[in-house]
Image (tube, rainbow over all chains, first blue to last red):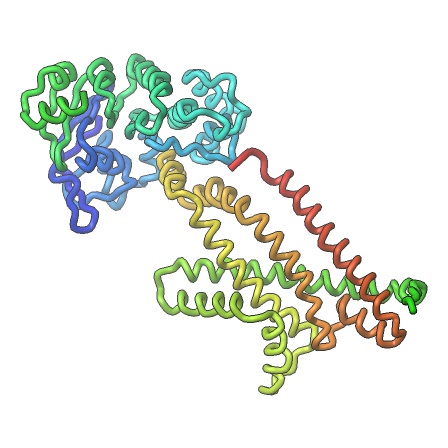
Amino acid sequence: MISIQNVHKSFGDLEVLKGVSLDVANGEVLSIIGGSGSGKSTLLYCINAIEAIHKGKIIVDDVDVHSKDTNKDKLRQKLGMVFQQWNSFPHLTVLENAALAPRIVKKMSKDEAIEIAKKELEHVGLGDKFDVYPTKMSGGQQQRLAIARALAMKPDYMLFDEVTSALDPELVGEVLDTLRLLADEGMTMICVTHEMGFARDVSDRVAYFHQGVIAEIGEAKQVITDPQNPLTQKFLSKVR
Amino acid sequence: MTYEFHWNVVFQKMPELLNGAFVTLHVSVLAMLLGIVIAILLAIAKMNNSKPFCYVATAWVETARNTPALFQIYMAYFGLGAFGIHLSPYVAVLSALVFINAGYLTETFRGGFQSIPSTQYSASKSLGMNSIQVYRYIILPQMLRRIYHPMTNQFVWSILMSSLGILVGMSELSGTTQRLQSLSFRTLEFFIVAAVMYFIITKLVLISSSLLSRKLFRGEI
């Protein structure tokens, strides 16, 4: 379980998270929506300690993420993350991209790491791309590679940061299908997204972020189709 | 009246010319290796927040890049000589080349490092890698292929610039050529052969560098 308790985070004088509290249960899919600058991506970066927080607590499976005693590299092994810019490693083949972290971080043998990498790449539909270099692939394929690369670490949670925002429109579908597949398999997911249809159909709950706080959170269909907060109503009327 | 070429004189002196060529290669390789080591330190210093280190590195880079190589060699040989520090021609030329190489390579390294997007770092961290692993497996391999060809250029430059050793009586290829032609008066022949030898040396360097790069770097950037 991921438990976010009254988290505050500032960049210089700018406070981007102003007291966010949120629990995500195992097996749950939570989508976070909101305008740019509302703090939704920052929250993801705070959950796996890529960004520090200034107040509050984030607990992942009884581990205080931001405590000085926490081994953050070890913690990140169970928190897979996929970014808006897919960030494939351009000097490694698709297979090497996915096998690297299991081999050097989890200290698996080369054969074991390759086996897991192959399995996850097939999982996201890249079974025919093992020896290709990522720069030769489309954005959608590179994004699915990023998902497989994270899954190869066998994470308990997956964090998705606007993973379809940088894609050409015709490539969005294949990535969303992959996310859907993971959700169906029971993966615990937090998805920052601008895809309202995806948020409504795939997630259990949706949270609407506005200026660093959660303005509304509730069952997915209700928040998207029948928002209670006027701010959510205004936001949704603009993105539709 | 037409000039009559007499190549035999030159070919008789081939062993000495080859010896000069060896010294040329020797001093350039050494200047490159030492230059790389110092440039790594200077690049780190330049990217460091600590002011004194940054100033020293900046002064070094700016001097090396904005003054003639000839001046550097004169300073090392005659300039230091005036203060009672007498370097041999070889050491004077070597220090000048190291000084300049380090200056140019600092900027190459800094640029190469800064050209790797910081998102590569966060993506690697998110997979659980520690900082050393991120540099070892992700940042440095990508950086190396970006700075590889500029480094080759710098090496070729060193080889050609070492010919300035002629001015302080160093017996590298140009110095040897100078001495031999003044003994035989076959100026044109000796310098043509020396030019061909420079050409062959640098061509060989470029070809082997390109072959090596194909072995080292697969894939695309």
